[in-house]
Length: 202
Image 1 (cartoon, rainbow, N blue to C red):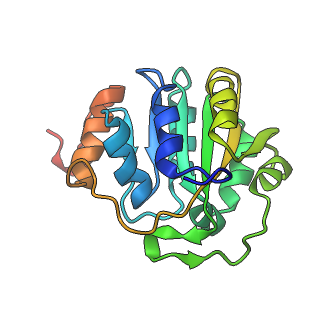
Image 2: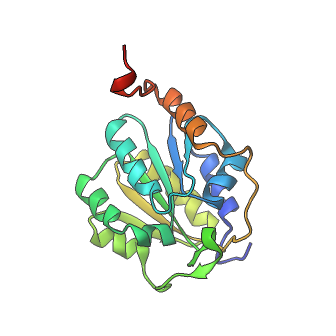
């Protein structure tokens, strides 16, 4: 771990010590989900597979539908650039219970480490311009430990942009990622009934 750019795992270990039992955590594809499953697996986690840039949109929907629970989205910088409109929607809807953590490693890690098209883009400034007033860049674990508790406790939405060392080699997840099983486990955790298509209903 360098002094200026902590690893994703180091940030995750701080996050694991701060999330409450009822906090819902949505992680993006690849190592974002694989590593979080190793650090803090729990039914309240929703691990995305092969859905680049959709962690924040899913978390936004959860925040609106579960207003009494804190929702954390762990999104990558490359994924965010694929769906920049999500920031505008978050700023417009302004859910008070949503915290976004943007992993800013300046590469598309899940697809092989290709550099972003604009590595100098200030993502915190971009979030503020989209209407998310509580957005800031974080470059050290000390700052993260200081800022994260308030981001999880105070009215949001809030965004913390985490300067992170690239981690291109795939991390082995704690268990095989099975999307239907992950979805059902998560639905059970938040008390949502299993969806049955109308054509199969008695």
